[in-house]
Image 1 (spheres, helix red, strand yellow):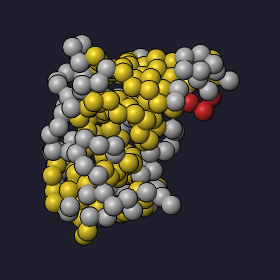
Image 2: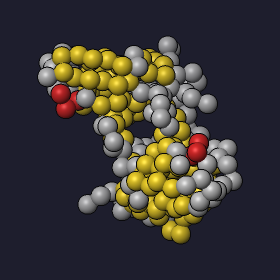
Image 3: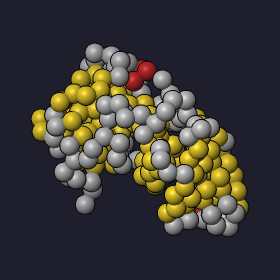
Image 4: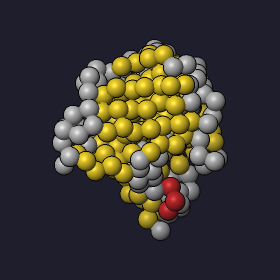
Length: 112
Length: 111
């Protein structure tokens, strides 16, 4: 069974559109994350949630809005997509701070 | 800001050889972790070493940590073609669930 699953895996969309990426973890973890990996493979945290509460918001534009309906889900909604948003977005989870992070397989977003 | 810096950026070796990757960081840490990313896939955790540990082993992996030099190394012994991947170090400073990743080392193991 997939521990951290995110959908869609590939997303091609036009500038200005709004899109969502969904993420679910079945590990029973309390903390979930969104990371962004750019074309140079640099991986940067965007958000983290602990028990549905926002812990980290790393100066991400307001166009990005995470939503955690319960601690097993953390969805990412992006408004008014821009070319620079093209990247791979990874959802992840961990039990506690400082522990192993389990990553999803990534969502490849291409904005044209 | 980026915490970890791996070097080399890319490493190409023959199957059976050992591969060593290094990671340097700037501020004090609680622990340091190494992850592997196969092309087109998510990151997979390899090993975690705490700030009070100096060396850790897991199978063919050996990780060292030198907090005085703010550096870590990952050694993969007897490499295999399947070890071809990008390897990232990540540091945890114990602040609000934030694990900071380096830019990674791309390891290519030629059969």
